[in-house]
Length: 85
Image (cartoon, rainbow, N blue to C red):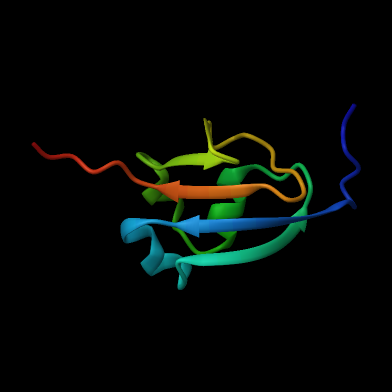
């Protein structure tokens, strides 16, 4: 059953690494329409779309695709893997 577009969702977002520079904060709480994709949320918070190529996210501790819809109370961790060796 699809959620109503008028339903608000309060999301807790934490940025790691270089993505913090775009978001302006390490952690934020943001209210959006429930069902919005994580990708859209991240872009709305200031991260340019071009920087999402290698971006990964966890929702409530589980790795999910950026096109996953968000729900009220979700905790979203956003980061880019670091290469090296």
